[in-house]
Length: 274
Image (cartoon, rainbow, N blue to C red; front, top):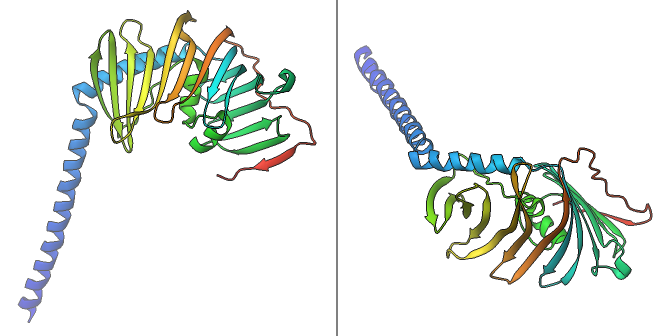
């Protein structure tokens, strides 16, 4: 009886040990594959370029600009003025006026940060507050995009965002270096100026490999040893919607920027929960 019990116990214990060893071998294999993925020469080469591009992006900060804006969407087709203030990569403020409003009064004033926004709709006499997400940005800026995309558009500079889970590769297109980023539910391509290392254009692609959102930089000038686009276009080719910002004047390194959104106490207040 004792021998039988010992044999059964030994077999069960051995089975547990085998299972643990198998799990450990699987973890070791996954870890090794992960290290190979993260340290592949092509990925490291792409990351080295991204670091240079983002370093040039960071050179221009604390921006205050005056611009002409043209917006063409399904619900709006107008040209007006837009004043912008930027603190990378945290907050942006904008005020739209001109033909968007009667007798050039301010149409909207907004402060958007990575987590929340406040938006004064002067035309409809209301203030909206809520969380920052793609849908809410689409509602207040008229073009649905991420906070980082909005920052890239309004700052006139392009920053490349990637994670450790994204696949990165590089190729050449004429005089441009193309970085392709593939991640969960995303495919993005960045066209980089090969000489000066800044983003000239980037685009999101759907599962049919068609562009559904692209951002184009032009009229590039050198500012604070970085590169600033005095014309930026964000387009949605499939729906033929776009926003174009053409700069008239700009100041950088403005340490006293005010991001307050001022509005009368009598306006209607709306809270968006999501």
